[in-house]
Amino acid sequence: MKTRITELLGIEHPIFQAAMSWASSNAPLVIAVSNAGGLGVLAAGPMRVDDFRNALREIKKKCSKPYGVNIPLNGKYAAELLQIAFDEKIPVMVASQGGPREHLARFRAVGTKWLHVVASVEHARKAEASGVDALVVDGAEAGGHPPPSQVGTIVLVRRVVKATKLPVVASGGVADGAGIAALLALGADAVQLGTRFIATPEASVHENYKRAVLAAEVQDTCLVGPRSLPIRQIKNAFSAKYESSSPAQLEEIFNSSSLKKAALEGDVEWGKVEAGQSAGLIDDIVPAAELFHRLVRETEEARRRLASL
Ligand SMILES: Cc1cc2nc3c(=O)[nH]c(=O)nc-3n(C[C@H](O)[C@H](O)[C@H](O)COP(=O)(O)O)c2cc1C
Image (tube, rainbow, N blue to C red; front, side):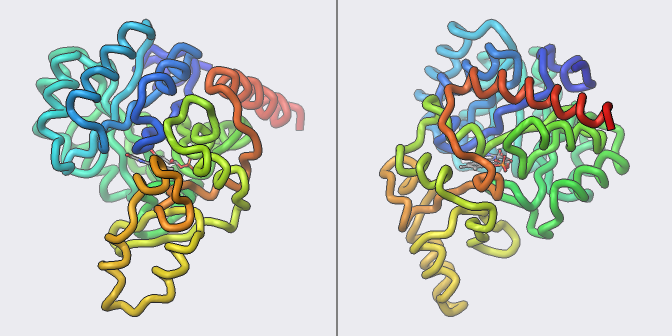
């Protein structure tokens, strides 16, 4: 499958492992996916600067193919992380939150392709105007930060494909090849999967977190946090407390929990177990490379099925 994204990035298959704080803040998952012919994306957001540099060096040593790095541009250590990514001449940046314009020229000079994560038509247009190479479009089903508007992946991706000329990587709600084929049919040039890759041995989250993803049904996620920047997570004791609290208490309760608590400590009752609705489509833990090959096979099957109708 050749698409504008496979051509732009020099990857074999139009399938990304999405950036996920903690779950993909480690080299092995990224290496497994990129070596299998997709794009593995390192989530730098929660990483210490030295850990980030070491992870990049490990990826470069063990992976000869393109890989991506996600840096939230308004994060506390964004400047340091960006400098390291620049020094290491990363092949692909998948930037989120914040404006890309001021960074593009210098990264382009070292050959980095710049993809920008957006969750609305307005931000897609802005990112296009600032000169990025491609867009990652997150719909409402997505784990992590879905769009505040709650427009679903099918509608938002289709709208952005029509509203911009840039290659689009569709994101949110996909856990298998049928979903990948569906979003490619909409006009996306690649598809990224986050939650699906949590259920791999390589994802660096606690076993309890992986088990929570396997146990979840499609209706078992909810939104917590401010309406302007909601988080999708698996329902638990923390989300129930959040939902039943008075408006005056919400901020304090929100700040009393964290993704780290669930991801590293394994407290899946009181931590934020960020995951997409696609958790309800996942029922096994599979090595990332094996999962990746299965996704490619399933995508081909879905294409054949459509062609035979
Ligand atoms: C646990 C978790 C952590 C995430 N962390 C980040 C992040 O650090 N940066 C980012 O741009 N997106 C982040 N996301 C969003 C993903 O990149 C992706 O958009 C989302 O997982 C797609 O939806 P899916 O989970 O249904 O596949 C995160 C998602 C999850 C589930």
